Length: 236
Picture 1 (cartoon, rainbow, N blue to C red):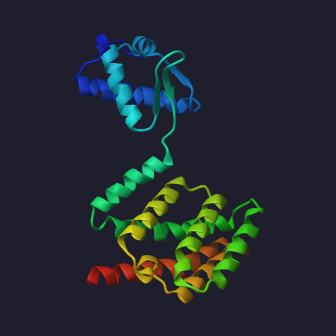
Picture 2: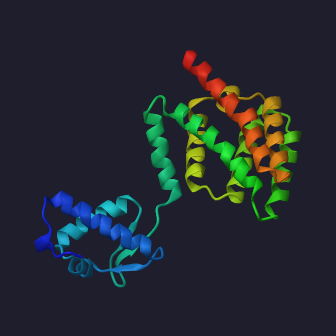
């Protein structure tokens, strides 16, 4: 760390620089690892106590830092909470009139890749679970079942494929669509029978371990429908 005497620039720039350095240190350690006390960090970073406190507020807001007071207290690294990120992202989407449509467009594109990656899953124990969900989808009798079953399907695909960014985008897009539209056909782009046929085709391709076919079916039966719905909504 450079001593504060050789750091030039304004106080906000210094806080930004120190926040970057402490961020890197946090990610280099296990979550929950101690970073030291206020005085320890001030000494190690070569800055004043007030600067460390300002840096701490920035990183606390990002979900990267816990400040514990009292005996055994100090500064401890952490990882952002996915639920908090979803809430913040969801609030942003609600503030932008067209952002939900954009998110739906992006997630439908990524869904193609998710299905293909699920077909390459090496954990054989996940495929019977997916097959059971597929049987429930095929047997569903009401449009009200689309939301819960679609959610379970997405959760299972997420378990088969580690895609944290896509998972967050999908969760937020689905949550915002629930709050903005009561009409099932608009929200999902399907009536019950079309949705069943789409998901059945995708699940069969994944169960066959055919990544190319899973991608093709997801694009044919899901993304194209979503694009049509979005085009119709834009025209209206």
